[in-house]
Image 1 (tube, rainbow, N blue to C red):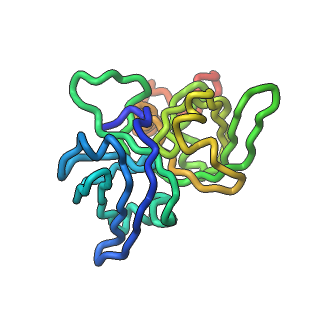
Image 2: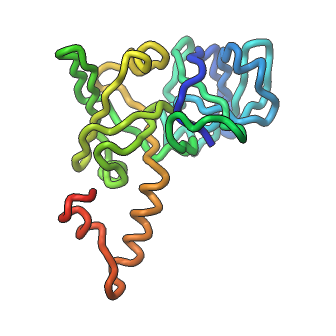
Image 3: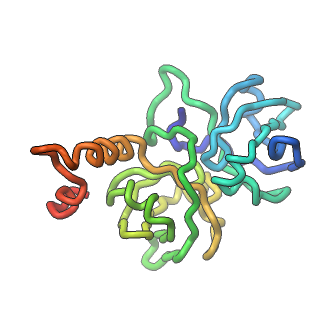
Length: 214
């Protein structure tokens, strides 16, 4: 489990094919010193298991399913990546609850820096935006963010200066793909509503939409 607060921006040093997928070797700076074999680190929001440590470098064996569902398979040598070590008991929850289980990929549609703001708009499959709500939480490439607007197949987030300075999000360009993990609490609420929508006296997701709750 993670919080979406990036602890270090590393670089992909090497990527090689394996029988199960790919091995990623990442320069992880201070995170490499504090991690152990078998520990979890989120790489651009995707939870990965540490399989080797060499100085400040950490290796991960990324399986085919992760490569298919995330952007990790498209990473090239030298690219910067957001890193976060797994949450420990007693750590502060400064972002929101992030599992490191990427739900899908979105693409940058628009970047608005007018008036000193930094708003990024994305397109995504509706199955992703159905689990989002304006002013709710979302993880983009592992970064905990607050949603500004949400529509069918589109959503936007606002970046503060700290986020642009301490993550990779400021380097994104139109058309770039990002990993998206929607809020786990919203997923459970949606599933519960869907399962009860046919029950007598139940409340449906459509009813909540019409009332302005989602």
